[in-house]
Image 1 (cartoon, one colour):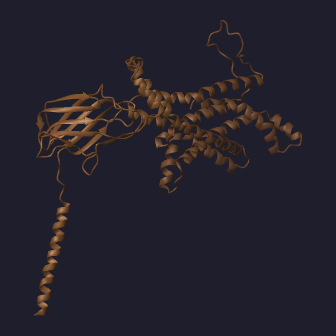
Image 2 (spheres, rainbow, N blue to C red; image 1 turned 45 degrees about the vertical axis):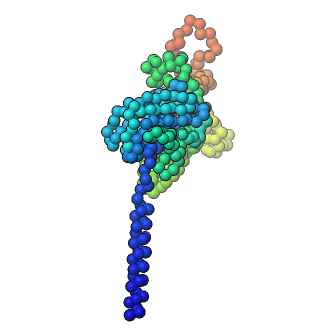
Image 3 (cartoon, rainbow, N blue to C red; image 1 turned 45 degrees about the horizontal axis):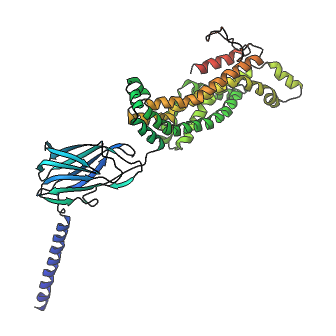
Length: 453
């Protein structure tokens, strides 16, 4: 009997505790009461300051309250003189037209509704043309509204509200571009469709200060890849001229395969095929290796043709002086070969530098990929034109160097070369200039092949 008296109250107590826990959890899971102008947030259409920005305030009204007016107070330093206000109201997914008036007073925009907003309305107030200070950071938009004659304030932060916004300080290029946006001279320039599409000053400034990072990467790729290609090209040239057939076969197979397939295919194999095979190499190192391997095959033919263009008497004279084969090559043949092939090597350097653009197809952030990203974001071709200028900064001086080297080589080989300082009076710009007479046929064929690439 005593056991029943003890068990009964215990079971009741356990049930009461369980019921309390269930009720508490259900109450905790219920959503908090939604107040008027709930779920408020502010969005911007730009990421940096020092330019006109559109601010959009969006919130929901409580089902039990109406809203007569909304006041948006911007921080000090925000210029609202040229701003324009638009209001959109939605009931569910349906747009509802509500008459309103807007007025700018100092740092505030007051929107008054001709008919009070009903409860459950999604209201969006867009204030465009607000000139924003250059200094970035986090700011707060103070929002107040009138509901049934009472002035209420929307909390700036909280679980359901966030009227704070932030933007970044523009870079130097972006600041200059923003100044151009307000220039009447630039506006007149951009009024010409061709100039606006291909050479818009605003995007040109931004591209100049952004694309140069990819330009430096392209230069780094070529400065590392080309010396490796020279070493590989010399080795392949000597292998191809070796008296041991297997060595010649290996060199011939490598040179023919590399020269017979596109560089883009080789890049795809390296960047896509190797990771599939389990070999993962850092993208910059992979790019250097692919460029070096490709260029070494072409340089091998350049070096081989240059070596074979040297008169055999040079080698025989060196042998008569007691030089070994290696000494004759190192002290007599190769120095003369380098002098002859230097213009062609410079042309190969130019070609390889331009070929770095192919790496953009596999995600290497070199010059072209930086430009392509800017074009995709702006819808303007100007970044591509700036990229072309960056390429020309390297290629045009090298092209002039090649021309001077060829002229000096022609003179040293006993040919004719027009003096750069001779009197040009009465001469046409298209006048034929005699080519070098000292280059051998194989070297000329190699030059022609590289010019056709």
